[in-house]
Length: 511
Image (cartoon, rainbow, N blue to C red; front, side, top):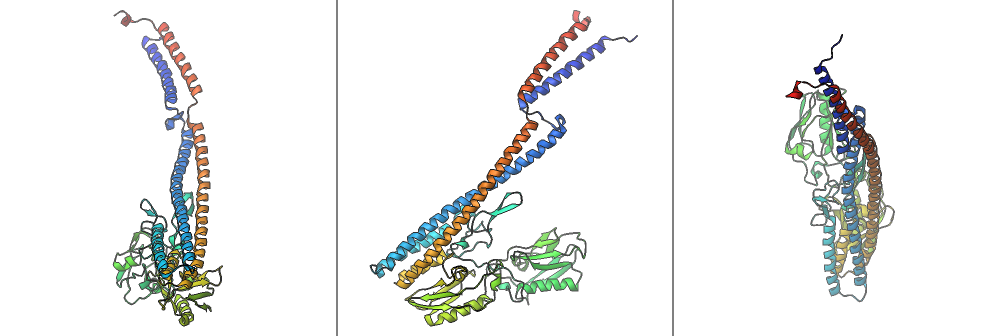
């Protein structure tokens, strides 16, 4: 015979009451928190799905913040470009007014002051910023795009943002696209192609030594004392790869902006970092430092254009196509016919040969980023027009209209000061091409803004769908939870009443 003791009944009663109470607490937690799953043990599989959706929602929030910033850049750029167009329109009206016979040398001097103020405005427009970021400086957005002389000093590449997974778009335009040209030559590995002296905006590379250690600890010393161009540096490093056990090879990056050091993993298994000792020389070559990678990409070398710069290397290596242009100086003009020139120096020589009879010459601008056109006759101002409007060679060299707002306004100002009506009229035509270019760039900004807008809508919809699915899995069904709680409360009360009737009174009841 099995005897049921009072202790066993008490323990069983407590266990049943605890279970019912635990169920009520769980139901109350679901109602108070609004979540069906509050911890992984509530529903392990459901929690995995919830965590996946939370990750997607977090990524969507991050991309939405990036797109909000991109919209600010693009909207500000659009507004600024509108202001640039308005100023150019005023400049054209002023030029037409002063080109007429009703104007005099005195009124033209006064008008020149207005144009000078417009030039200052253009520099301010070019240096438009949002917080600490200059929106027209490309990837060098931490520094102004235009210097005090009206030359572009930003990067040769657009500032980009990843607006959705693995999709980057430019979020603004560079001032070199509409205010003043930047021929942005790529670094060339051709013999004599890119001089060391032209790197870093013309600051060059100081002569000196530095060590390169590969990922197995093998070291070579590079001495640039007898080197004149980038090809010399690459040839020496690659020569050491052949002559020694050093497993490093040098090359130019695919975008033509920097040096790349590559450890040959097929030759030896890497066990440490690629290390380049930090000296003034290695810093100027953009490769100082240490990285645990087999492909070590250096910093942008930003070369200036020089006479030996290949036309094929201009505009980041995309090059340009030569088309004939026309030189003007007062009432005189001359045609420039190109016949297969391959370097900037050859182009300059061809232009200057054609321009000699009318006192026009071109040279590399002091900024090292474009060409300048000038007249040796102080009474007239030289300018350039395109013969082939589709190719626009003059614009790309920085001596035509189009993307050269500041130079064209300078031409207009100088022509007004010199009382040169031919130069004033010439500036009118160039202002027209500038306005067309600004409108085109503004359209480009609009298309990028539209892409951000469409992508934002898609990301917001994706976030909404993820939130909805997460809620379906994670959130509480309040009606069901309330019914469950009411049922558990009834069961709990019934348990207490039945237990009180079953359990016999003990000595404690009489104390």
